[in-house]
Image 1: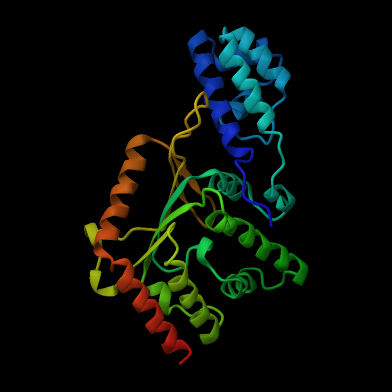
Image 2 (image 1 turned 30 degrees about the vertical axis):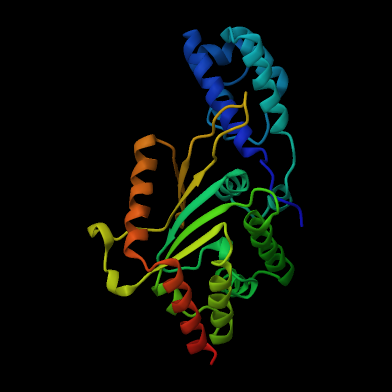
Length: 295
């Protein structure tokens, strides 16, 4: 199974920010810039918001000329457009991935670190195949077996980020104790899932802490699930990708990039982590409950 790559999502986001920045510097409205580029304003807006799957390099070159972008920066923008054309593993599952999750998977594959809180569900990157398939069978009960197999493959591909040899994803997880007691797939599946969590927590790049029932509501509020993706320092000469908070919803998801929003969720995670059991105590609890499921 191939390693997760940077993919097209991050280059498109970086390119969109640069297109917006240099259009604003030029003093052109979106409508006027689109007119000069001989394209619709909606199409230009989609480039600036990274709501497309690829951008023609000719459009970028022309925009750089109109906006007065310096040669070296313009060349970098063209390179970003070229990088965005690279096909990655998740493009093979485009028929199964909704747009919001397609964006998330691309960001996750490129991330340097992932901080997440899941109060009632085992995080996807740490789910066993049996646990995942049990959820899939409930969510898509009428789906043919082939489709379920492909959906299960999506999760396997995503999990490569935590086990790849070079720069595996740093995963810092807080899981609510309720997730350990909500049955998914039966006692044997749950026992194997909790043992898998305990074993995974021994890896250097994975930290798992359980928030026990007796911790109540740290910070005085009930936090919904969230994920923070950090991208680390970029190589010299490449643009920085800011951290992003992902909030998954049943009818739509949100991406928060504002610095104050990201800081709030990092602070919330710190509060949850401090209230949770430490890594050793969490591992012991996981193994104990696993034995209760399957003595």
